[in-house]
View 1 (tube, one colour):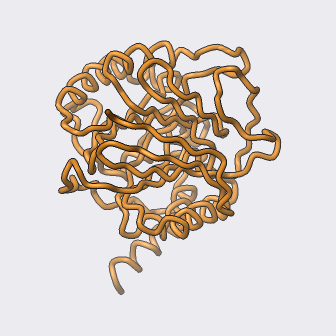
View 2: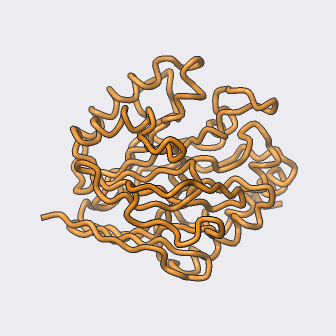
Length: 302
């Protein structure tokens, strides 16, 4: 019995705790690459997640990296959910570097109470951040012309459990940005900056927008609201809400903050982003499983 077959059986049984360590890639700062970006793959039926993931790699087979920006599963303590997620993501994960991000649904136990994201943490081994009390919660990753800063901003769920998370992470982020020698500074974090019901910035936005301006972040990719929105630049950074890759449909209001949104929010389909990064140009597209282009934008460095 091969190791791969053995792991697959364990995953199907709900016992799959295996995932390869996210190794530091030996890539030059000038190397071009493509990346696939998904958000909120949580499902009742993970066939939906499989469909969008498989379609993305069919459309962009040369993508070297992939991420899901939080809420990979509906309940982070449910082994059967992780088994279904990994089985559906098998083609996506093969021969690609995967950058995981913690979402709020990774921070629920089986009784839907707030908890540490232990199901996530034991499945993904990411680069060390130098903070012993927050191993796996946030990290940076250099690839080609970009540094990715992967944050855990699930403060509503974790503040009582990890009261030092916000300040510790901010201090770490300042050091990590200062130490980056790559052209593009890209943030991946789950919870979004905006409250559409109240039509105002969330506390998350009030915390991070001034910080990202100060640190000259170029691109911020968020999830959580299950809809695609392009806000353009807010200060120095471009803010993109990345839609959904699962079957959980939310409907948010339109807002003047958005430059691009779905033409019909009630029937907005699953989408993903394909990002191409070179030293001076970053090109991003938002696409459906059928290849329809929702949005396309370009960022440039002088």
